[in-house]
Amino acid sequence: MQFNYFVVFGLTIFGFAIMYFGGAWIGMRLAIVGEPIVRRPIKPRQMRSEIKLSLISILIFGLLTVATAYLVNHGLLHVSWTVSWPKLLLEILALFLWNEIHFYISHRLLHTRWLFKHVHYKHHLSTIPTAYSTFSFHYVEALLLGSVLTTALLFYSFSVLSLLTLPLMSLILNVLGHCNLDFFPGRSAQSLLSFTPRHSDHHVRNNGNYGFFLPYFDQMFATSIKEQKSHKHSRHHQG
Ligand SMILES: [Zn+2]
Ligand SMILES: [Zn+2]
Image (tube, rainbow, N blue to C red; front, side, top):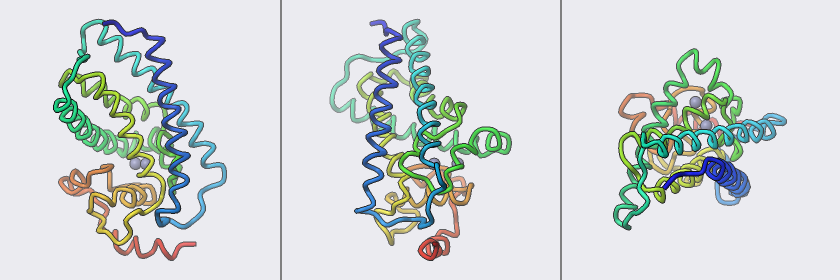
C-alpha cells in the first residue's frame, strides 16, 4: 500500500494540533490535583511564544512524516499493516523504550555548547515550563526529536497501529512533564513518578536530568541532578 503525501501531511498536522492544544488545555487544569513545583510566575507572553514555536514544530513533524512515507513508498523503510494483540503490546513497549533512549541521546547532544547556544536555548526560554512548552522547540530540535519514529523503523518494521500510539503516549508524558506540578509530592527524585519535578529541575538548572520519564539513563551515565533535596526544599520558599 502506498501512502498519499498530502493525506499523510494533513493528518499529521491535524492530529498533532488536536493533541497539542487538547493536552495543554487539560494540563493547565491539573493544578487541582498537583502541587506547584516552582511557585514563581512565568514570564509575560511566555505561553504565546511557546504556542508559536510549537506550531512550527508541528509543521516540521508533518514534513518528517511525509519524508518517512516517501522512504516507505520507495521500499527503503518498511511498516507492517497487520498486528496481533500481544505483538502490539510488545511493539508499544519497544517504542516507549526507544523514545526514552532517543530522547536521552538527542537531549545530551542538544546540551553540547554549540547546539545549546543556537538550537536548544529556545526550549529553555521556558525557565518554568508550562503545558504549552511541550513542542516549544527550535525547528532543528523539532527535526531531531521528531525523527524518533523514522529511526525506530531502521531497526524493525513496526505496525502502523503501534507507530500511531507513540505520538499520543509521548504527548501525554510531555504535558505531564512540563506542567510544573508535582502529583506525588514527597516521593524520592529518583522515583519513576517524579519525572515532572526532574524535568522542571532541568529547566531551572539548564543541565542534568537529560532523560524524560525513566531516571535510569541519568543514573547510568551520572547525569542526575544531585542537589534535589535542597533544591526541592527551596522551591517552596520561592515567591
Ligand atoms: Zn534541555
Ligand atoms: Zn522541557
